Image (cartoon, rainbow, N blue to C red; front, top):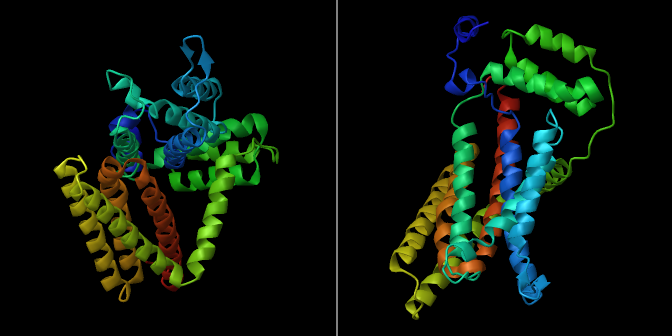
Length: 352
């Protein structure tokens, strides 16, 4: 069936990616998030380990096996896994291994942008941070701006079935496949896919997913935290306080003779002020509409993550890593609270 015939039956216009046979993976944002988090965590852990051990070097007699090589090897292993097997089973592990490899690779960017191979090149942290944020923005543009097409949901169900037809379905895999099929509606191929899913046997053996285990544990902890009503407010205060302290410290160093560019200090001040202002708007609105208020808190955290931290990394170098960790924790708490509030709203008004 042609794209035009499918469009007439579904009442939708075919996006250029679908015309090219490129449906988006329904779980892509999770895999990309794993990749980026693993990248950032690897850089921080690598820097901390090297600093604690006195920056040892592997090699001798004129040889130095830099960790960029291990990063390249791990990225190659990730590609090998993802290109060798059909279906979704290995994607979580591939994203994790690839993220660790890319973290080891990008950690040495200072050596490749300086003529003297300077690992300690001052803007390295900002370059790495901008790279991770840029990849995150590209992922958001690809997966967050356009709602899923029913045919993409059908492709997701078929993708789950790829693993099921050879290894059987675990209850979780069957649930995912049936949820994708439900989202697809009655697009061409849905009926045949439904019959295929029903024919797949039950099988509880599956490849362990360490990412899912960690993510589920984090979600449980965050949901436990937000049951204590003071925790979300404490998270917002931590965001404002951390931003204020870090920006003030950076300005103090600059005022005391630090050679950081003035435009970087100005950018940190403006971005920090915007983040605090968004927090104040959230505080003003949360009493009338909790969901709306926490959406403003989320915007404040995102501004801090995407803009303020970039300038702070340029000013404070690796000291800004603590502010980044606080921002990530606050974002998790705010997101968990938003989910709880939305679920309560839906329970009160199912049509909302």
